[in-house]
Length: 149
Image (cartoon, rainbow, N blue to C red; front, side):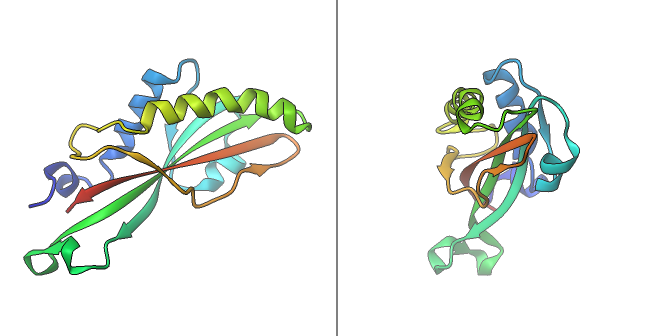
């Protein structure tokens, strides 16, 4: 039997992750987005956290499947991107701004069990590297949670 929250809304974690970040990482806006481009191109706020569904990792073994495949264990991946605008070119200046915020994001989400999930979020590899332009820095942190559908 899968999780009712997941069966009702496959992306039910997005608003929960956003709310958790708003509560635990003060003085920075949080938004759910659909593409990385929204952070890289569209957003002009000085600091922002963007929450993005980053796909699933599916268990390949039969141990992760039941009921003829209709119930399955999956590892849902989430990306939290810290976007900083109007950053200086020197890496030290960017890191001074980003480092403490990234630590706060990690502490807010790693080990947290969202309502409707049975297991905690844990850190996972982010599907992208940090990105830097002349005026913007984007730092991705990956998270993963095991769910049953």
